[in-house]
Image (cartoon, rainbow, N blue to C red; front, side, top):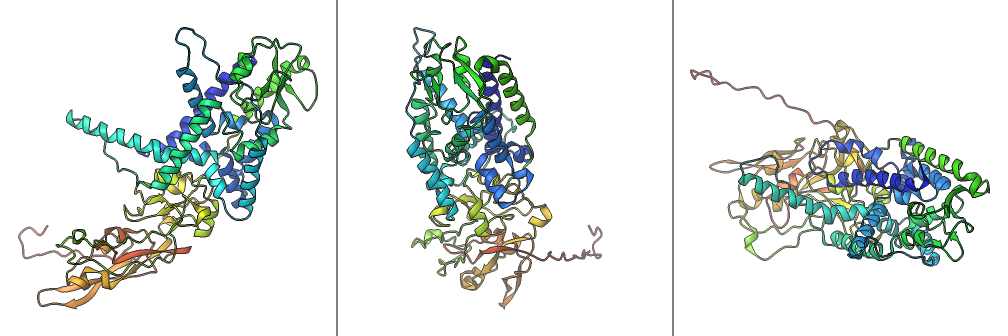
Length: 548
């Protein structure tokens, strides 16, 4: 394989990674692909690093492989694996096509050599590391390329896909086909959508105008890998005696790292896209073994061979890693409204007045504790995307400034399905650990709390029981409350020993604006007792001719 064909190899590998990661966020049909999430996300640098810091296991060592590859071949992660970097390449390519001269086949040049912005770049890296060591991941969460890409897909692209699906359902129903089914819209969170939109605009503009400028000025992962690539073994080098100054390499270098005047390539900013190797018409550029310090002529063939062998080894060395991600956040109390229109007269004659007193945020099963979850989550929102009940929603300041956008459990739009383990299987940072279905069903993330003064049984002397009907463990039981001339009133009673905090009771409770029953989060998760299944004896009326 000629060295100029490395660009084509890079494009195919990058597209595979990009499509697989994109599908993880957009797969609303749960086609079974989530079982491969660990393998697909194994090489994502920041998630793998955080998972390794929490659990130093082989399955969480993807970032180590990335560092080894960087020491060998430079910043191959940025062009081969990073979804945000690949997304920038797609934007840059589309932008170049738009400005193509319609009268000529050649495109107008979009790139040129640029001066480095090392001060800003390393300042961002130092700030990220210092704040992380101080216990806040604010900058890391906002600038981590994988998490930034995940937020854009979750809050900007995924709603478009769901809308297209629902539109297709309506059209097919008119034709008598039911091949598709309607899906629920994701919960709209202005802060999350706004930050995702700002990120998209900033990354899109920079990539359209300046290629990989974002990666070489604001990305902390790029800055760190740039330091490692400075001492990498195989590097792209210019041969001053063979370069004729045609500038073709500089015109396709999206990192702006080629200096034709000095005949040098800035390896710290080079993202190993190999565009220059494909564009060079002669022998002006080649990959050399810097550690041996041999000449380009002596190393042309061995360097090429070693580079391809390394890429093949990296592709075959993808180990499995379990993925986890979850967050906790206290739900905001609903503000009381003065309109009686909130009340359904058939259920509730007046507004409730006692607000829920939440003692802390609720983190999903598998997160172990609120503190642990908040320290590991990077707000990539993959768990938000895969949650079928839509109860995982981005928070704003529920965790404080350092936990901005970390997901929280919100039971206003649904409840945690008793048998669901979707979020447990996809978290790339280990913020949510994988649990078996049986262990998940005994993980107590919170406990239901009952406010009798808000319940319609107390206020309206009418039976309800919605909370008990929706409780999967029957931790909410209906017990005798009051005897009326025409009926007996039953009122909820919570058994905290078997309550798992799934939110089924809170979601089903019809009282407004405050719930009569709600879930208070456990700062540290507990394990509940197994609910006792009561055998129900069949009652047969033998007096009838057909007792069935």
